[in-house]
Amino acid sequence: MLILKDLQQMKHNQIKLTMMTAYDYPSAKQVEAAGIDMILVGDSLGMTVLGYDSTVYVTMEDMIHHTKAVRRGAPDTFTIIDMPFGSVGISDDRDICNAVRLYRESGAQAVKAEGGHLTTFIYNCTKIGVPVVAHLGLTPQSAGITGYAVQAKTKDAALQLITDSKAVEEAGAVMLVLEAVPSDLASHISRLLSIPVIGIGAGRDTDGQVLVYHDVLNYATDRKPKFVKQYGDFSNGVTALSHYNHEVKEGLFPTEEFIYKTKIMDEVEND
Ligand code: KIV
Ligand code: NA
Image 1 (cartoon, rainbow, N blue to C red):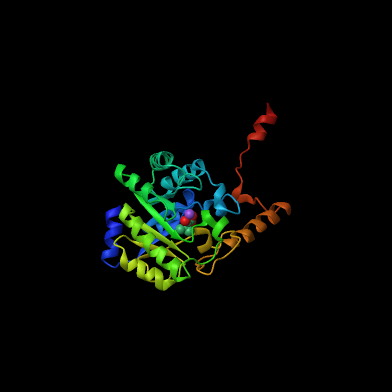
Image 2: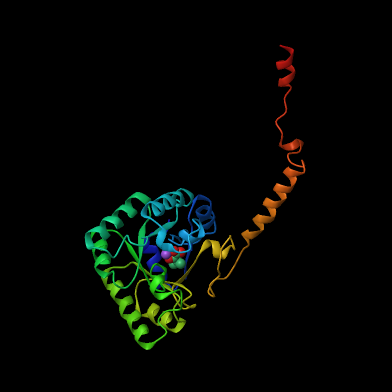
């Protein structure tokens, strides 16, 4: 398994870092088999696998449950667990207890938290040995206030993002995820920081990229942001399922090859 030091070194060797979300055993197995560097168990699972229309309904228990399955599917891949809405940013004591619980119970190698206001939290976690990935730019847990629009489009907002990025690095963040920000700004921040900057909708000059599994594979998603490239198509599963439905209704399945055959009823009836 690539450990944190290896991943951080890749930035300095100018090797692009790859990250993909996964939420369960089969998706994690596929991501690991594809040789992707890191797995993010994102709270996007609220939408992609639990069917909510927002990440704010995802609980600590949801995150732990899914991350444990991911770890079983990808035991050799560095895995990051999202801190769900309301589990961080409330009070210093509660925040750190939640981070400790997610880290210890899930088996993930790092926790990720949204927002530039979390420098104390990041510092506290780092002090006790919990690696934290910061997440800035579009932070979906705040979509109730910000919406899902591209962030940092004004000069003030861009300067604030630069300040926040420096601040989370100084607090001890081991990596930074930048979501939906202008590419020239993401490029600048990537050069400014020593820690890897992983972009999603942040252009091509970040140190790495992350996308959502269900978006990449067109697997029953409801909306497709501009920054998503679809590399595969799991929607054809519907065709397969319709075929099964049809064959059972018409008596075409199961055929001989799928049937256990004995003469056991001859014996039962001869008794
Ligand atoms: O939850 C998630 O999938 C994320 C990525 C989009 C970065 O946070
Ligand atoms: Na997330």
